[in-house]
Image 1 (cartoon, rainbow, N blue to C red):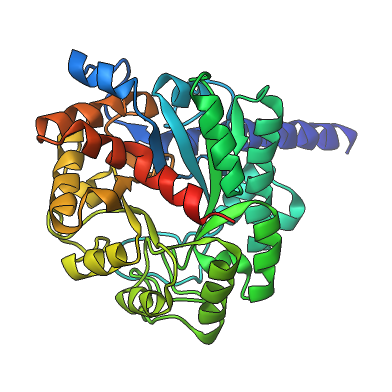
Image 2: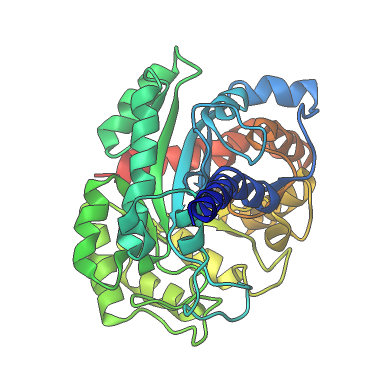
Amino acid sequence: MKKFLIGLAIVLAIAAVVIFGFVPTYVGKGMNVTINLPPYPASDAAKELHARLLVADLHADTLMWNRDLLEKGSWGHVDLPRLQEGNVAVQAFTVVTKTPRNMNIEANTGDTDNITLLAFAERWPLATWTNLTERALYQASRLHEAAARSNGKLVILRTKDDVVKFLQRRQTEKDVVAGFLGIEGAHALSGDVNNFDKLFDAGFRMIGMAHFFDNEMAGSAHGATKGGLTEAGKQLVERMQERGVFVDLAHASAQTINDVLALARRPIFVSHTGVKGTCDNNRNLSDEQLKRIALTGGVVGIGFWDTATCGTDAKAIAKAIRYTVNLIGADHVALGSDYDGAITAPFDTTGVVQITDALLQEGFSEAEIRKIMGENVIRTLQFFLP
């Protein structure tokens, strides 16, 4: 019996090493692919211009993965060293709290959940295994903890004043990077609008109404029913607007988009999307939706993956940007990479200069490129954060 118990202990120890030591990295690396490896070529004109830009990206799910944000990673797309190298000034860190198995852009239910297994394998706190709000709060704590260890090189934007102070520092400190927190799907409130206050206090300043399935607040473009805002969802939108938190319409159903726009008194974000005009599928926005979002003063983040652009390079991204700018103007378009969101990207964040290059080739002016590459996002944060 003693030998059996010793043998069992050894087997369990080996299993623990495999599950906790190798599985999360294996899964994360396999789901966050980069087609081309650095360094990334670009024209001299693009490199010179890119070095002078304030670049901002509206969407990265990096906090979901068990990587140190302050260490340059060997896989995935975003960390502080790579943001610095890519001259990215502002990065939205969006948290994922639940995704269905076999998720797709047509129809999903919330009956299954991939994140429970990830939380277990990555040794998240026990409370996160069953509570979606706790999952959001835990991922937010990871960003705050990284900022605290960064010697001031990573700061978190919560208020207008934070943006002003960051921009002042950025004039002389090109290696300081700002992050702000967002949420993929209002199911992170665990069905209770009152949980909004906890999320606000944790620093969240952008909340998507839906992700890959319908939830208690809103319908998803990929849900089973694709309904609109529920009464609780309407309450949530009102509270978000009162507190200076941006509504994110990425993944939202057509009816949810209509319902939110009917209530909108502030600019709306679409953190990561494509447009039907260049890539017609259920994931992307129609011309009419784009025009109505722009009327709020909103900003649309164009994604970097193939479902968003129907392409796998910077030229495809620039083509989608060109179409959108022609439709709603350069003041309403931004970058929305979906980095580390289980996508295949043409480059990691050190290669964003290739978008600058592709925009030059598309004939955009320097003023337009400045807006698209980051100033639109930063301006909106500066004027509309609390």
